[in-house]
Length: 408
Image (cartoon, rainbow, N blue to C red; front, side, top):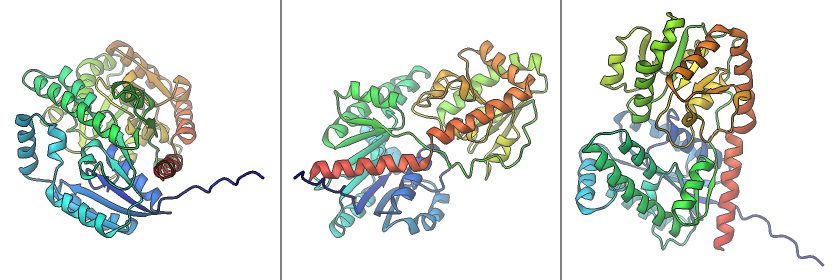
């Protein structure tokens, strides 16, 4: 008689560590962490520990609490993170890891581990790996999201000395830490297959897999049949984030002037919080409007004919691209903008590598409302097929089962 298969072991108590409070879900890392917590909370007890580094985020603890069996937070603002990073620079450690080392959170996590029978831990971002001991009696999954050390290498290529030297040093130090972290824990997760491939190669064959981001398909849904006015373009993102700043500056300086030769009314709206002085200065140029932070980006997407993603520095997967596609807005971007997204030109996107081809791709769409509408619908269908948060949650839960069974 065949031996019956054992039922899957579902973790009950999950320790979830993240480097920023994952609410509101309004930027890449917070979006991914929030949806993981929201999905897992339906069937498991989540003990969340996270850091707060902005005063306005203190008010969001109340929004997250109902999802958690427990929620431990600690303040990471002020001068202390900079001093810890400076100490790491002199001592040869990773500045990123040191900047997220907060003794108060270490104490809170230690007390939580004494009082709760944790079955498995999820470490969200490599900087939080320092809060889980290699000798912990439960398995650990590290969601790196991206290979952060490569981000610092990218920054070095776009910066002058001494920042280029500092960024290269951090790339090497953080890369060493990432590899050590992956080797001592059960599984590594990334947002895109190319990031997982890169890490498997650099870390010597550690277990690594991709679990892509999803999109809130009900929230990012076009409610009206109206299409954006032809001359309106949009870029959405945190506007103090170096890759976003670099992308927008490049577009305004190199691409927009070419586009406005054929479309003199073309207007780029830059939508996102904390615009830097450099970004604010772009608002004085013809055809540029710096909107800044808004409570809801959807009206700006609905009003746009094209979403532009002119990235020259990027890692992982761009949520802003998926959100625009979900809102039926065609996207024109560099190849880097679509890494981690398996879309083709048949799915509502256009790739362009240089300013001239980028301007032509946008110009063609501005001239053809029918093409824009058709591309928008294809983009929406692509996201519905490939980027549902439900699929992300199921993949993560399956992985939790695997590592618990493997440890037992």
